[in-house]
Length: 305
Image (cartoon, rainbow, N blue to C red; front, side, top):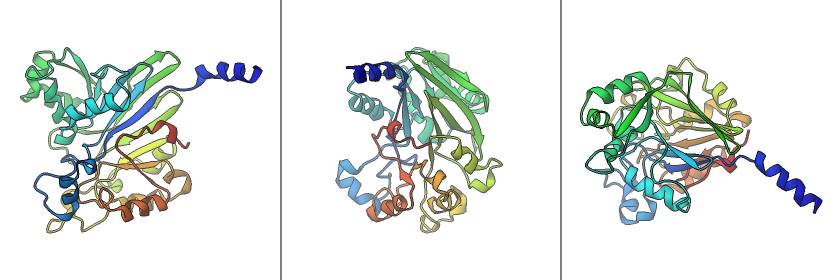
């Protein structure tokens, strides 16, 4: 009886915060439009192999927030309800966007008058992204009709903090180098209860960033990092310098230290990346001590700091 009482006293200190992976693919999803090659053929034939575009759901207390509004948002909102047993509201408390490439914001259109017609749903963005959405249709109509309410973030400053029910939730943004045709690109540091998560689904080569990724990873429990391409030469007939993401092989080399790699989860896989469709490749990554984000998994229990 004394042991049970002690355990019950400890319960309020246990974080109820959860981080769910709602998608793992690059902007075009998997399988990819126009791809009839071997990398996508099995997914066209077998729906169980298909994957949504990279996105996260973060739960704090009895509320939740969505990271990225992908082209798959309709399916992902329902998917979140399915994997959590319908415990939470259909719409999130807010949406955090990294940048203006289609896989990361195009799903906003589902909040418009033609579909859900939401009421001032908070959307957290960096300054250039805010201006882009305000000044260009059809996104500007979402702002004008107050379907969404843009909340401007500043790099390095917490955007949101909630306390209560033993939970705290804060998000800070930082800029990363990327192909910024329409907006800057954000990465997010998510503090949830006693644990911290890093979310960088899109970035150019680590060498182009003045920040040391090793120091960032060392300071979090879980780091979800850009895994778009596995290695050089993956895009046949196209120079990969046009899309200079860090290859998975490069990131594994940079973060080879045992205390770093155990925190890394690769995400945002292009359809050409064998991690998506070749078991041998994914096992090779895991054999080196890294992780591969899996659609539907709850990352909270895997925190290793």
